[in-house]
Amino acid sequence: MKEELSGNIFEEQAAINHVKALTFTRKAGTSGETKGINYIQKELEKNSIDSIQESFNCSSGSLMKLLLAFLFLYMIIYEVILFFNQFAWIILILHVILVISLMQGMKYLLDWTNLIYWGKKLQSNNVIAEISAQKPRYKRPVAIFSAHYDTVSRVIPGPIYMVLMVSCLFIALTFLLLTLIISIWSLLAIFNLVITGIVFNIIISVSLVLAISFQIGSSIAILNKSLDKSVGSLDNATGVAILLEVAKLIKKNPLENIDAIFLWCGAEEFGLWGSKQFLAKHFEELNDKYDLNKSIAMNFDIIGRYVGLMDESGLIKKKKMNDSLNDIIFAIAKQSNIELKKQKSIIGTGGDHMCFMKYAKKAELSLQVTCFATNKDARYIHYPTDTPDRCSPKTLNDCIKVCHETVRSIDKRLE
Image 1: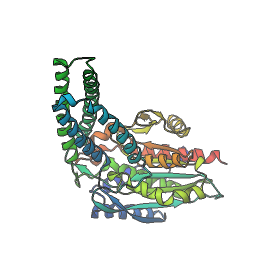
Image 2 (image 1 turned 135 degrees about the vertical axis):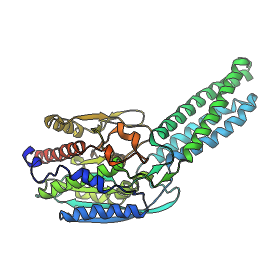
Image 3 (image 1 turned 180 degrees about the horizontal axis):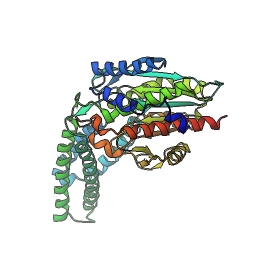
Image 4 (image 1 turned 90 degrees about the vertical axis):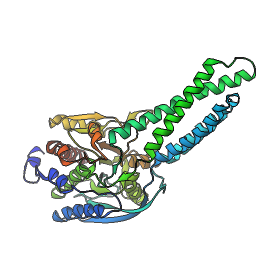
């Protein structure tokens, strides 16, 4: 394997050259997106890899902004009640309604199998390539490699936006806790079990300040428009490059027992639309054709100064990303003397791997999904700072090697 990867089929400068060639904006629904698609398909054509382009409808609305807008309006009701503190006990009822609404709403919004059209309507495209196994058999496994190619930038830099979002979340939770105390206190006061006084009024004042702070912060976040100024080298020309090079390696020497599908997703930045639409259209077909219980899906999103691998999933209750795929990847990396760092998901971020995980879970399948990402380099994304000089050629090559050797290792175990 090492001899194969050090030979002519592995071009050391190829991946970083792809990143440099993609140094233009690729926002969904623009001419830059079309230019990006053309580049991907031309590179595949050069290496005799057939590909298709699938168009789909999507929208530019942000679910996180929708949630902030809902909380903004809901807090106005709280503020009105707090000005008439003798009716503060009503907040207890509002809390119950809010919790039920959030539980049901978030359950629906975070179900990545749902196609929720909100905001400006757009059309985007996926690029799909498939390389069949040398020994195709019925219900064989499949390896799905995915990366989005679209870019987006914001008025507010990524790091500041993340701090703003986390701050808004913290303020909202603190506000809800204080108003819960106020509502219970007010209810007990009605029955003369406690008295309201200076402490009660101070808590109300603090709650009002928090509500106003949240509304200012959430307004800034909601008005943080998407622009077309970032060339998206880290996010996600690196992922595009890795998929192209892995596809070239597998085309040169196809897997024996596993089909390989390569998916370059469009409109990921507007809500994972490419992977959602791909799975909505093809998941049943994939499940009929392949044994998804023995299959894998690898996503690549932000590969910068080092190779990172998501090791946990879940917003609150964390669990292992997959049964054994990550273990195999870490073992391959160690054997190849490649540094591979465990990563955790960041609040407010997501990736196409989430759609694959959700579809598998819904179908009660044990498809093993993972995501290569570099958390520390997220500070540069969604802003003009996301440029090719942030990308390490060695990191890209290390990621290609680990990915390729992992799928080869899994393929050999099926012999």
